[in-house]
Image 1 (cartoon, rainbow over the protein chains, first blue to last red):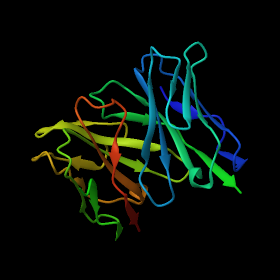
Image 2 (image 1 turned 135 degrees about the vertical axis):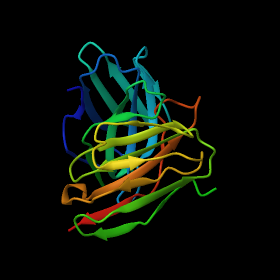
Image 3 (image 1 turned 60 degrees about the vertical axis):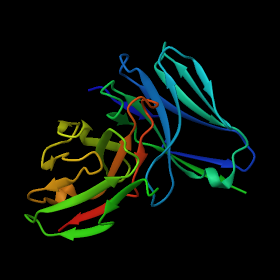
Length: 113
Length: 114
């Protein structure tokens, strides 16, 4: 079936490095793609989204890139900090009134100082 | 504002027992949904609602019931718990007209079925 997945389950970086978290998706009909951050013991927290008609969107220290040709989504975190350590999920909006998201399995980002 | 509040935070059930996970939001959001999260997996959508009186099934609805009698509340009912329903459950809400993927999640309810 249609699904959203991530390339790597874990990623370890040094404080100050840039981090890139990747995600592959299979549903060409998805309208929005979203990144969430989940800290231990907490619910997921929205980071940034991108519409399917865009290639790039920037936020504060984060950039999301969308490559529809190869169905690839990435989240770039600049100057990674220890507080960025968390599990990151990509998700796609299946167009059902903005509430039904399909999540990937997650990448655990570990930042060492 | 409290945001999205889930109760209980922890629950242990025996197979066959029933229970209700409560979810309330005070942001006047139209949309609410329930997800379950299993180890090493992303969140999977159980049920969702686009407004009071309206609910629909997600990816994994079997074994769960929901209702939406008010805008604020969206309880999830397990009628006959099974060990396969051991999971962490998250309730989320979002605003009609907001960013389509921006859900506000509760802190989760950890359920163990023996």
